[in-house]
Image 1 (cartoon, rainbow, N blue to C red):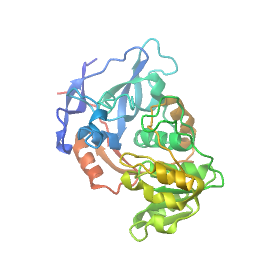
Image 2 (image 1 turned 135 degrees about the vertical axis):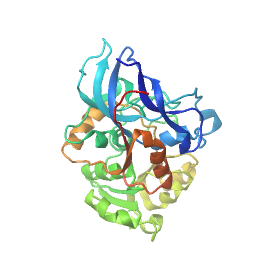
Image 3 (image 1 turned 90 degrees about the vertical axis):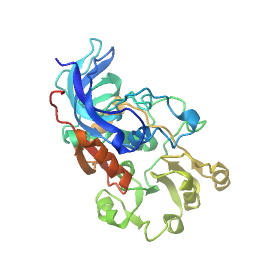
Image 4 (image 1 turned 60 degrees about the vertical axis):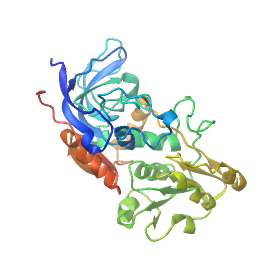
Length: 343
């Protein structure tokens, strides 16, 4: 068995061109870990945040990195080996996972590779009804949507606010989803609809048919109409874009309503929220194999679907990051992994 593999690594921070496809040591599973032969990798914003050196984070939050590093968190593949103490997974099992997040923010997740060693607690069997590419596109986005809307799934301190995030009841409620066509947004639309909400999707006009097909009841084309100018009496706004401007949605909420910014950095609307009787809450998504196992039947039977924006091979990781930088992504970007002998 070779001790090497192909991987995409960073030797410095920078533009997509710093992603280098090269030989790297093949991981060996430690206690509690499973070695997975990767078939596909899903891209997520933390991938390019890491590549750029987390410039958007305050200096005290920027993780210390030791080069070279392998970026990425989301994989789907087949179990190659497992540590002696691992139970519940066998060689040949098809699996998917979000690897070591947020613990691996400094590059310890190592998903852009032919093989990755994964804590068994973060792993779940791949839904049989979808292929490896769709499974790899799923974990971070679906866990984000699930932990915001359905079940937080842990008791870890929330680094983004003093109190834990608490999902709100959705049945019979009116929910607006901003950034509805993106990786997290299109899953929020589907989960909210599954839980009985009336869903208003906000995206560019080209995405209307796509989002209505996923269950959106109403649609706002942000290029023609500012959602905050027309939406009123909402029970919940999930802002999958977030950032400093997320406060513009506070006037759209009824008293007792809630605003969930997926990306809350740069925003503090706590005073206005208190005056309006509105809750603002956010959280940091965390790896959770048990939740991926719970979600798998919904993916298997098509209750929720993952849209793939574009596919690239692992060697084309830089091109995939360029696609991400171009914006207006519908669903997820995926890397396919073809196994060969390291040079």
